[in-house]
Structure formats: C-alpha cells, structure tokens
Length: 170
Image (cartoon, rainbow, N blue to C red; front, top):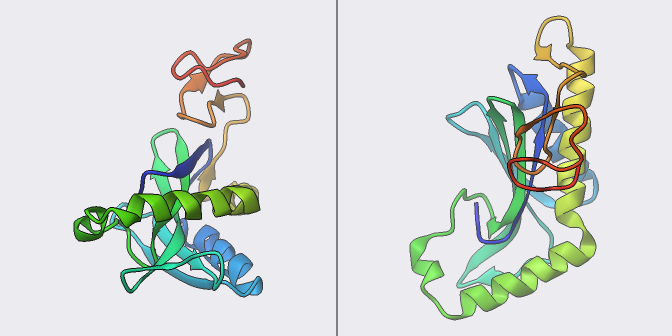
C-alpha cells in the first residue's frame, strides 16, 4: 500500500468480503467522507476515504486513507495507509518528487492523531466478526480455540504472551 500503514490480521475467513466493504463504506459515508471502493482480483476490497482538511492534493492528485481488506490463509488482512484517492499504488512519478515524502509524513501524522487508521481497522474488524456470527453456518469459518497474532497472523499457542514470529505482545 504505502510507506505508512497499520495492519491487522483477523482470524475470520469469509467467502465474500463485499458486506464488510459495504459496512466500511457506509460507516465513513455517514461521517461525510468521500469514499470509493472496488473489488480486487484476490476477492478482497480496496477502499479510499478522503475529507477536505485532513488530506491534501499532491500534484493535482487527492491523497486519501486507503483501506485494504484481503483474504489470507489465516483469516482476513486489514491494512490502512496513505495513498492516492481511488488508486491502489502510489504512482512512481509522484514518488520521485522531493515534497512527496515530507507531505506523506505530515498527512500520516494527522491520520495518527485523529486515529483514523485505527477507526477504519476497527470498523472492518467489527463488521468481519458480525458477518462471521451472522453467517456462521454457511459462509464463515471461525475457530475460537485458535488465536493468531494481530500483527503478522502467526498462529499462537494458548500460553504464548508474545508472538514467536514477530515478537508482538499478545
């Protein structure tokens, strides 16, 4: 996604992530953000959110908080990071400009201060858990006895206090 991002692995697998994406889109629309969502070839979703004062235009392109919801073998990956509104990758031409990293750092600071990235991740996670509960018999596989690292998705043993893969506290 980009240089600055927040990632979380949720140990829930859904055959269709469209309801989760729609919940995230509706949540931010209700807060009067500009939103754009599109499915990805991997059955995931890419969502861009932007709002007047928080995000700036860089060389005529509107920056946004991009949210990626992707299925993984251990559940569902949720990522939130700064990028271009409606685009999945920062174009190489823009990355070459000197002002881009400075502006990106400032925008990421604003996003972190507003906890917008965490808000997006939490919204998607709540929707995933809700969808898993709602469709548990037919579409979702949730095993509550298994726990996974929320940072890297590595399977944790019941007594683990830290992830043996990345060292994140449980």
